Amino acid sequence: MNHGKKSGEFLPKNNIQIAVGDKIGNDMTKEKFNALIERVESLFQPSFAKVNAVLKVNRRWDDPAVDANASQWPNGNWRVSMYGGLARHPLINDDGFMMVLCHEIGHHIGGAPRSNDNTYWSSAEGQSDYFASLKCFRRVIENDDNITIVKSMQIDPTATQRCQEIYKSPQDIALCQRVAMAGKTVAVFIASKTETPNIQLTTPDNRRVSKTNEDHPEPQCRLDTYFQGSLCDKSVNEEVSHDDPSVATCHAKAGFKIGLRPTCWYKPSSNEL
Image (cartoon, rainbow, N blue to C red; front, side, top):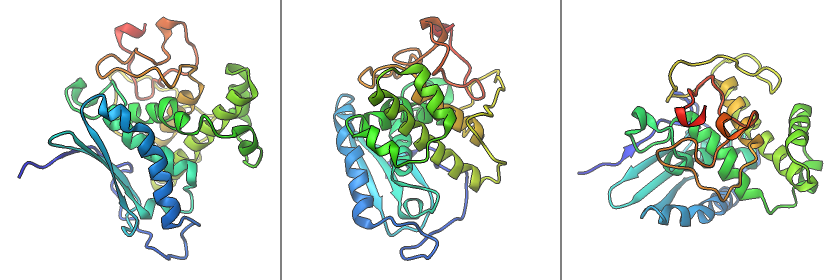
């Protein structure tokens, strides 16, 4: 049998489980779980069609695993699996759940850098995070009444400050704030499962890798990546490249100083310097 090829799990290996009806679960319902997935899946089907593939999201509501993953199968069947245990986790809200789904979609169409020095189908973990906030989740919510929505949210002051520095219209600022907070939700959730000390938007990981890390970056580095994706003022309609990481992203050669992939996991290519 010709099996598909699977990317890494969203979280490092863990045995966490949250069953349907578990008291520690949040207010997620099966109906909302399916609706959130449909919202993202339907929006990105055309992007998969452009590369002669079909996106199939496996809705594993009854599965208690706190995780998600992506896989590619023969004949253009590209899959993402979203687990009910993840959706029910008390640290994951609706936006965070959709951001995780965007990360998994990013493994398929998130562009370079890809794993194994660009020879494997899957975008690197950090690139999938960057794509999730830069292109995917932003596109999913861009037409929402984000000004009203963020008024009911607790927004990190640093997110507000930086978003106001980059964007000018109230609508774009609110969109940036919401994307940034979805990224923070996911990163804080990851940190809680890896016994990482408190991570913050004000404490970026300033390490500079000598080679791009294709595996899961540290939680602070992942937070930085989601945040920088929210601050990159590139159109969601500019599609990233499968091979060239400089396309449709923020990088130094294009004059950007903010919104770049963090160097705690990413080594810029020659096209970006």
